[in-house]
Amino acid sequence: MITARLGAASVTALVAALLAPSAHADSTGDAFIKTLAKYGMSCANFDNCHGQGNAALIHLGHTICADLRNGRSLDDEFAGLMKSNLTSDQGEALMGTSVAAYCPEYLHLFH
Image (cartoon, rainbow, N blue to C red):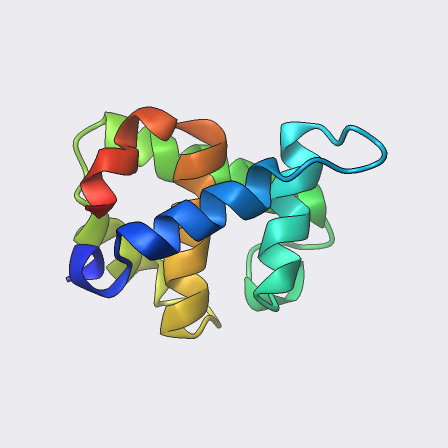
């Protein structure tokens, strides 16, 4: 169960990393990409990126949130992510970072 693996402290750390101030006032998308990079993720982790790079990753973050809004559970979303070339730690980080960036109303699901 993802809620057991990715606890409140981990989500708090992800939110802090995502929202950390920088010298160049990054957009949410830039901060999202930088946070994923800290966990070793890039478009190369996904078969369907097809050279779209960061735009595909940002789209994936939005898709995760759309799925949650449409009633998909965190566990089902995580299981779908595990079909890509991610470690479980990366999958958890992607879930938490996506929620922190694009649908923070779902952060409570990680507690």
